[in-house]
Every structure is written in structure tokens, then in C-alpha cells.
Image 1: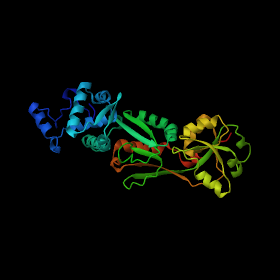
Image 2: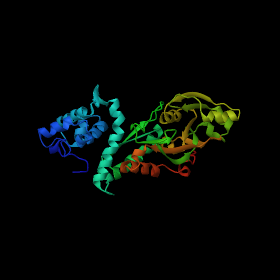
Image 3: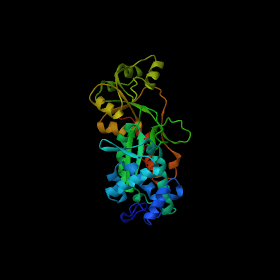
Image 4: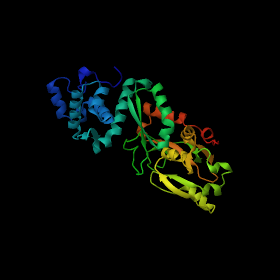
Length: 340
């Protein structure tokens, strides 16, 4: 039996619960408002239930039957005085209270496992976790394949979930919606840890054989093309337009899409001119698109990652941060333009 698992014959009545008999269970139920009477196995169950958001999925991970897991969910609800998970169509969704405590519950469970594993005994291959990364969609498209391969080789029980950036500001690290944020970090929350990874550069990108590539790409020739903007907020202008304005130039933006991968497919089949980041080169190279240095003075894009300090010492989280550090290329590796 691995660390943190519950034996099926014990159900959820571990040494801290009501396993001593009916009287013991009654005493535990009466004492739920007192920390000393809480069945700590319920904490493990709550962590898995909130991660799976499914009684069936939680039952499989806890090595219990679905009826036993359903009864456990009932005990969790009684202990917390909250429904925790409620049905919405064919799915179960967490309540606001459940969302508020999910990150802390997960952190407490992982700390407990680390304590009982002993110093230096954490085995990545024995971990069973879901780690959530939030960032620009291009990051997942370009680098998720390598992260999945790394997880399969080093931590096969770790599942990776990628969430896109939202056009709304939300404390996704603080509330536990995400474990790690990767990209241009603009958070101002004082408690969030931020690590600088590299300074990135913007590049132009067009289809092979595009007329813009027939001669030197000057600011004038660049501005003269029809351009495609990318913004999850629907913006049609940005730093490139400010840099062109300083030269007395203005480009014609004919449209906008919300994601970089979508823009690349459009650029592949049109004469539009687009923008990309140097670290997204796996995408442009795979599609056979041509990238070129922009003939403009633009501020660098500071690429980094951010996380909540409660995850500082978590072995799984440290492994994920290490993977991101190692897999992302240095500026010299990714920024070299590709010409055809």
C-alpha cells in the first residue's frame, strides 16, 4: 500500500475516526466541531473528491467502492456543514466554500504524507497528484508535449492540467485554481513568489513565400502589410503600434483572434502578417511558418513563473518548477530567426 492510501477493509474509519464501534462513531460525529475529534481520513477523501469532482473517480483513487465513497462524501458534508460538491447536469461542481479551501486541503495532505514518509523519502513515482498550470495557450501548445513526456518518465502518477489565461483578473494562485503560472507575470499580490526565467523577444511571422520576404523587412514594408492581432481581450493595437507611431508609421490591422495557435493557422493560409514569441518557435516551425526579426525597438517580454508560497516545499510542485526551468530554451536557442 502506498503512502496516503486507505485500505478498502477500513473504509474511511481510520485510527482517528469512529472505527472502534458505534459508540466511537457517535462520539466522533458529536465532536466534529472540535479539531481533536475530526476524522483525518476525511481530509484525504476531501482532497481526492475535490480533485476528481466525481464520486466514481474518487472511489478508484481511494480504492473504495462507489457506495462507500458516496457515504464518505456525506460524512465530509456533515463535518463541514457544506454540500462541498453539488450536481450540475451530469457533472459535480464544488461549492464556493470548497473552492476556497481546496488549495489548503491539498497542501495539508501533502505535508502529512511528507511527514510520514520521513526526511528525503519522497518518491516522485509514487505521487498521485493533479498539477494545474495557467498561462498563455501557446505555452501549452509548444511545451506541454515535453512536460507530459517528463511526467511519464519521472512521475507517472502526476496529471497535468493546463488552463488558459483569462481576460478577467483572478487570484488563481491564491485560491488554488492553479498551482503554477507561466508567462509574462503581472501579478502584484505581495505573497506570490515570482521567478524570472528569461527575457523574450517578439518576432514577425508569415507564411512561406510571403511577399514581405522578397526584400529586407524595413519598418515601412512591415507597416504596409495587412496585419492580424492576437489578444484575449480583443485589443487591436499594442506595443508594436506604439513603436511604429514613434517612426511616424501606422499598420493596418484587419482582424483579431484570441489565441496564438489560432493566429498561426490563419497566417499559414493568408498573406496576413502576424506576431509570435521566440519561445513559441516549436509551433511556427512545426507549421512551416517563417519568422523574422521585427525592425523595431521593442521592450523585452519578461518570461517567468509564479506560485503561492504554500507550495514552496512541496516535492511535486518543486519537480514541476524544475521541469519548466529545464525545458524552456534560453534566448539564444529560441530567438534565432527562421528564414526560407
